[in-house]
Image 1: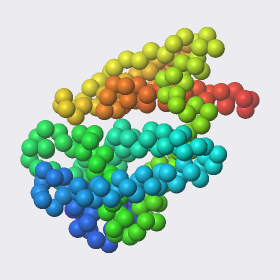
Image 2: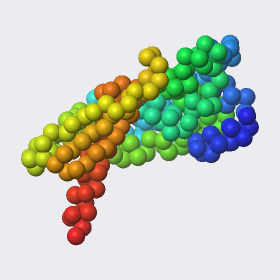
Image 3: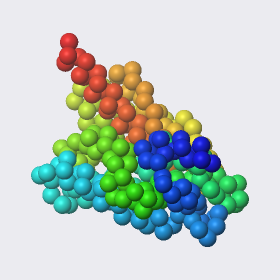
Image 4: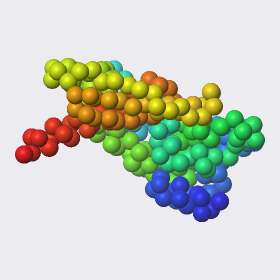
Length: 232
């Protein structure tokens, strides 16, 4: 278990002094009475606070309403689930037998809650600055990628607006795979931009979320291609 914790701690950038606290953060309520629900409560609070600080500093002229919407777009189950998958939290969770059999280690809500619980555990173990550093490492690229001029427009809309004036046709989205049981599925979607011979992929806890991720990947690829042309 210590070696397993070590790999997770390396990914998070913090070594817990209190390993029991870390174990509790990874324990679902189905496993026992000493679980991560109270830590999740703490983690949710520190996550919203730190994301608020990051946005406040990154966008000094945006009004409160737009900052709130940006934070809501960043701190949602889909984004927390994606971070949890990247951290491989599912392999570290302690679940009851029923949850194990039903695929709880892949369930987006359980993984998202576990990530918040880890933040709460980091706060108690080492203080606000450490929890803040973990959050900043996980969210820095997402915050940097925000374009306030497109705030309020989702990735699929922005991709369509990029393609239409260039007469490149509309993007096509295809469901290529669905994994997991009915209540804990992960959808894998392909986005095709035929006029550019571009294919990107996305995944998420819903088909809509997967399509948005694939559209974001397409936008990033198109921006890179445009940058290469400009550099010549």
